[in-house]
Image (cartoon, rainbow, N blue to C red):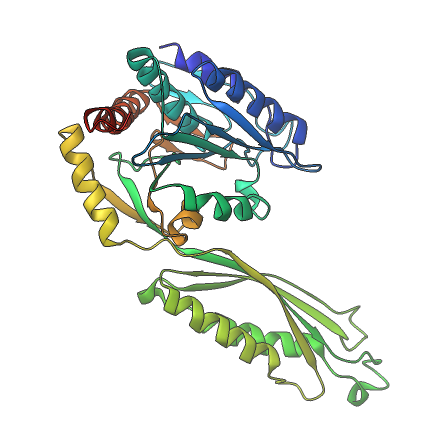
Length: 370
């Protein structure tokens, strides 16, 4: 299966998000392969991160489909590198998250091109900063989303090859508390303790968590103070919120402001900074209808699942594109140096996606829209 050789080619290139040259090298290799299939490349050039790339096919009337992936990984140079394989698994950075998924999409496109000698109404968007939150690429994603009816994201599949219909939304924020420094021994009562203020806010923030609703608030880092003999003049709380519904997002944002603006220690002042990185991806009727259609096309059941983690599928779903995620291979231990992907799942995923994309190509041809 030559596509494992292709996977090795891009896995062997370190493409840590901050390694611009490495990410760009992966993008260039994908560009070479996709242009062989007739795609046109539009690069969104960046100075400090890898370039994002939109590969476009010829457009005709009919349903417009976007394939979605990312070229970056979470592994800095010399931390976890190189492709390996045995009879059952492939190993290496990105084999499931998500260079493996990109190869699934590529191979499905190759199958279509081999049979039809053309590809139309299918584009492929590869971003360079997904692992760090897509802070740059998400604005491009929002802009191009209006051009598509369906989006298939190639993040890793579930254990039973489930596709993903819902993902939590996520936001990252910092609350900075300011007090007044004073000597803890000689002027204790003249100080205003920012650390104490932060401790009250910590408890209020954690109490926003509602596991029954799938809502979590995690204060992952706290910093404050100068030393043991000084009343703390400043403290910061770095926190993340995750939510399954827009209503819960709005509740959390409202409460964050209230907690920030409330001084639990007299004399302290606080400031809230941060943003929602990805909106929630919620299950919807159009997804359900699409899955039923895909099951007929492929003559097999397509199982679904919801995930707490986020992906760029969140962005396109929030832009009202019918979006399904998890079309990559099945893998384990992503974001660790044990990352691996099941070889047999590649073949199954490529077969599935080839049937799906071929259907839409043939459907437009039969309808006389070519």
